[in-house]
Length: 139
Image (tube, rainbow, N blue to C red):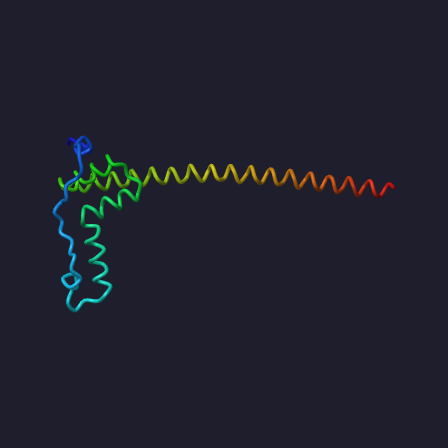
């Protein structure tokens, strides 16, 4: 079985994305679900926020996705290619985590260098105190 290509044609498109037509309720009265609790209203409001294209784009930007990645994600959404979307998000998350680990290693190197410098300074000060005390004893 041939695997579908996850390449995106939207990355080559020029210009801004058009609204997808996903309606977001602007009226608080129509967003309320009769007889339902505040928790369900809040859950629905969150769902509607991320069901809109603007909400998705903002979330992807906040996650550090490139314009090309965002265009592909939206193209796949129009083509109902959820597996490609999830694959891209998983790969982006993996890259972010690798970056975090790389930066943690760099921080560890700096911490070790600070530790070595402080230890050397402390050892020198201890040596000077010991030498000074020894000189006083011989006088």
